[in-house]
Each structure stands twice: as structure tokens, then as C-alpha cells.
Image (tube, rainbow, N blue to C red; front, top):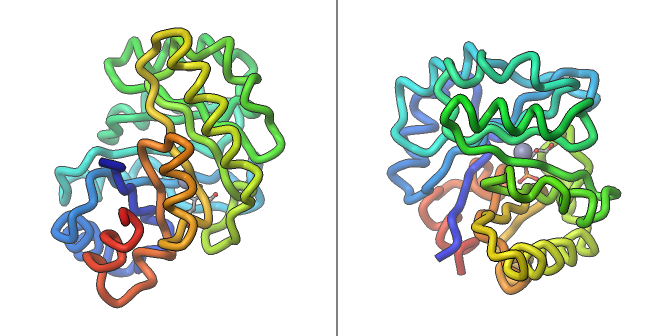
Length: 214
Ligand code: DX5
Ligand code: ZN
């Protein structure tokens, strides 16, 4: 069954503890945490201290999506903050292999993300080091955008390539996921769907999650 990772970016920041408790109760498996530095993306969100505080309130798998330049500088901070999975952007790393290796050496799952205009095969040289590949289905930086349908083709390509090579790599889609387009992402092979506004901006989180799951 596909896993749902609600994105904290769309939650009510004045009530984070309540929001994460509600999302766990509503049946989410993962919590997606979007870290933005105002340099790699034109927006600033939150950092390791906020994640550490939320960590104390939740048992969910913490899926930390780093939209920051040279993320290698901050891997140890996010490990300490309680991340279970740390995803970095291929476009933001000077040395992708070294960055993924550092995440794995700290005992955490390593993810590699690609922006909408980065082709799927750009990730192929790194798949052996990845526990997950995150396909961005919007330009990173903001929640609440419309999914770019063409990006979903990359899920099919990555699924084929990982299967061909016998690799156990999860595929995650992030941006603009809603109940209407989730079936298309799932049919292409997505294992995890990030959902921000389509969960946290709905009155009933449980219903919102089950509608996305289909
Ligand atoms: C965008 C973030 C996404 C975003 C998803 O840069 O990486 O995780 O919060 O939000 P929705 O689901 O509203 O597009
Ligand atoms: Zn994200």
C-alpha cells in the first residue's frame, strides 16, 4: 500500500504539536519536513531546532527534505534533530556521492531528489547509494502548487531502472498531490506520496488521507 507523508509546511505553525498528533492519529505513516534556505529555493521555512521539537511529539518516520545549498554541511544537525530519512537535491550538491555516503554512514536512510527539469537518468549513477528517490512534481519552494503531469513519467523510468538493476529504492512524489492525481502517480510506481495542502488544509485529515490513498 502506498504511504502518505503529509508535509508539515502546510500545517498550522502555531500548533505544531497538535498538528503532528492529529496526522498520526489520521493514519499517516511518514511526516515530510521541508527545509528551505532562501538560496537553493526562494523561500525560507524551518530548520533542525524545529524538527527536534516536533520529534519529541511524534513516532512517525521523519522524512526530511533538504532544499538547501551544499546540504553536506548540515547532515549531522539533521541526524541529531531526529531525521530517519534525509533527502538532498542532486542540483544542490557539489559531490552527490559523498553527501549520500555521509547520510548512510550516520545510520539514516538516504534520499536523492530531482527538480522537474532534471531528467530521471541524472539520478542513475547514484541509485546504489539511495534508499529513496524523490521526484519533484512542482518547482521546489512553495506548497499549494499545481502538479506538473509530465514529471510523473520519471517515476516509471526510475521504477524500470531500479527493477532492472535489482535495487530496493523507494520512489516518492512531492508537490501538488491530490486525490484526483494520486492514482496516476501510484500506477507509475510511486511508493510514497507527499501531501501538504491536500491534507493539512482539509477539515478532516483522516478522510483526506484515505481519499489520496484511494
Ligand atoms: C515544495 C515542497 C513540498 C510541498 C508540498 O517545495 O517540497 O513538500 O510542501 O505541498 P503541496 O502538497 O501543497 O504541494
Ligand atoms: Zn518536500
